[in-house]
Image (tube, rainbow, N blue to C red):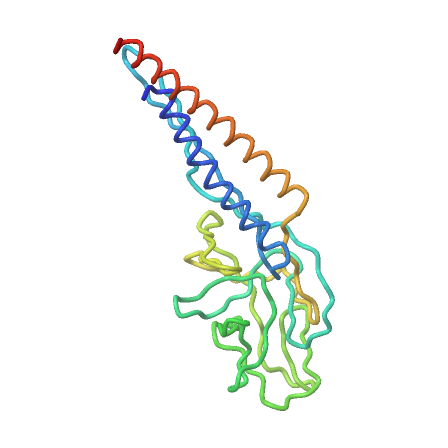
Length: 236
């Protein structure tokens, strides 16, 4: 296979990866707190002494779209949403993770947990506890959670120290390494943040990637036919 064939195969591999990412975005259009992802392509150039240089595309990473999504009123006492930047911090078996999904419920011990059972952490990194039978649970915009006017905890907002270190783990969870408190975001009660995936633009992108992949496949098929023709001609 010549250089053009290898370059096309490399491009096809990247397009397949992008198609998987776009499909995952579409599948999570209705997932609370989901963040859209995109594939970042880089260029690898091999400089040759005698032959022309070879340029190859490589899908080297993912880009996370952190733009604010729409907020939906739910009225739930333990449904929280962030307006602005920042993430909630939750405790998982794999360590602390960031999330924008603010759907929590008290577990048997009174700790606020995600639907997957991950404990919500406060500004000091401790689990948020709500006494069983607590009434008039209210959340101030600075994250202070109270019951019947008595403060219980202050839910902290966090950002990665290095924004480029943010990595999507699974679902709506992110790993970011070192974290720092974020004080400028607002925390709202009785509200959930929707997914920030735009259905129309995402489907349009899927069609665009699919067409690009089909063009690459047609080139490879034509190149295969050309090579077969040359071999057959030389074998006569």
